[in-house]
Length: 467
Image 1 (tube, rainbow, N blue to C red):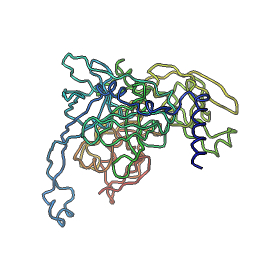
Image 2: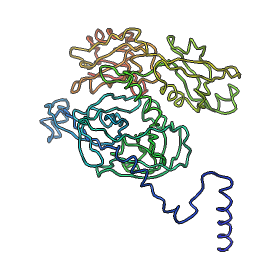
Image 3: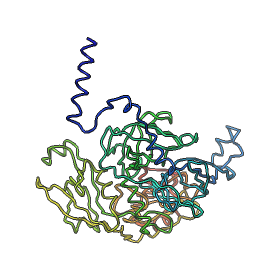
Image 4: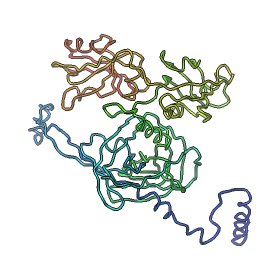
């Protein structure tokens, strides 16, 4: 039996090369092949990132007394302390431009990077884009040319391709792990606004965030961003932001598409879409539940000019097949400002094509941003009218075309315990809110029960009663 098995195995390995371009190792020399050449090529451009931020917390004088702490929950003395965190990044320009995750440097007051040779340099934030969870740093190279990694398209990748991840897990120092591409176009994780990732089983742990996912040709195909884990350690399910989004962000920075506040100005299409279920596919006469169903189009959207309508099914963008709504959002988000894209869609069973051009999100109607004052639960929060520009800046999903959204919350105020940035205020004390200036007027009056707020937070409508 053993002999037959070995014979069959030998026959299989002899036949495979005739039918496949990529084959398993055929000799001892091939089996002992190393990732070292790829690591040597990329590792010098991978950086460790150390951040410091000042955090203000209320320290209760009754912290050690459970009874009084419960009686006076809001009493506290503001105290500041310095917190540190770590992450990874990769240099993509010899002048010192580096890419990392936005969550790695969020709130940082001081950033230091270290190279693979141990030397440290200060860095500053050029752009932080929470929507894509990417950030661009400028390292003070002191006139030195830094080794830069090469971005490689992820479009030609296949599930099963070998990859390596480089980063600084748990702060132990630069570490290389290997694995394969487990899935492409993974969109089931709610990690950033686009939810379009490369999935890998290469070990990624806390501290790896912002580091590169590298192909066997030495190109950066993604930025490691998140893991699925029950205890914080690697379970072999990691997610990387594709290099196409990284390239788009870098191009935007170099073209000056960054606001004074350091936010990326994203291109805008003004289309809301949903996934196609099996039932929807059957009702539309589609062979399979693939594509993105347009559920709404903003009146100022360039899609109106392009002839798209509510109910159309987008099946491809620039020749790339669209599997679901997140993939459509990702493809459109990688367009440059003013860039055109060919949209393939189906309407009434017929396939058609049109061209759409991305534009800067219109800041209309006026946002009329207002900071709430006085003795009320929203004091210290800033609110604004919802418009396309505000939607893009805050990364709002499926927001109503009209309404008021929280744009900022002052730390250590009551409003910080009641609302979050991105919450949409629908009503105050039973009165529907239609404008930002109306919120201040409504909060000046309290009912017998206190203030009654109806908000949308985290996609869920809630009613809050605050006394």
